Image 1 (tube, one colour):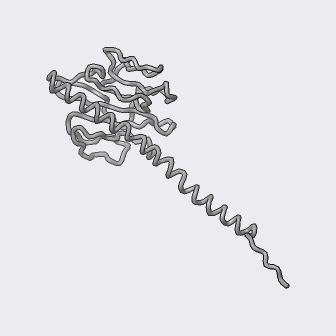
Image 2 (cartoon, rainbow, N blue to C red):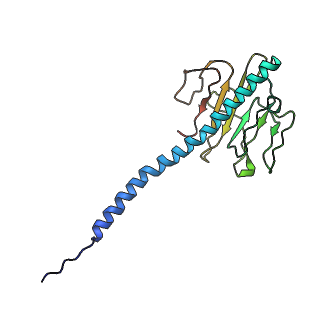
Length: 190
């Protein structure tokens, strides 16, 4: 009488492990890129809030403001991006348990208390317009490093319609409507 052995051979198990390894090699980088893209939604949402705050302030005072405290813009804690109304050295510091907005704060720094790395914003690349506030309009900016490499992710929003002049992204020359965030330097696709 012949006894039937049931089970898998070593070769069959090795083939299954190889297939799982190939699937993981394809899926994990895509998952990491998807996570980084989802983190970009913070910049888009907060820049739209900055736009709304600036427009409301402008309707009331007939001018735009360079100061985040004056317009009432304060994103929630745990922010990965630094937000700028103009280029300056006065920040809403987020190094401790509470934020401290100075009356002359022109920017909100990355929440380093939550473990995010502080940013230096000098020398922006790719033809990105620096944040500015004039009596007739403004450009706000968000800068963050969402995937811990050396490249930063830069977003901007403007009170005026504009044409993208960012030279290192695929949307060069596209029209961007007033109040629409633009990804001027994409950290995810690099």
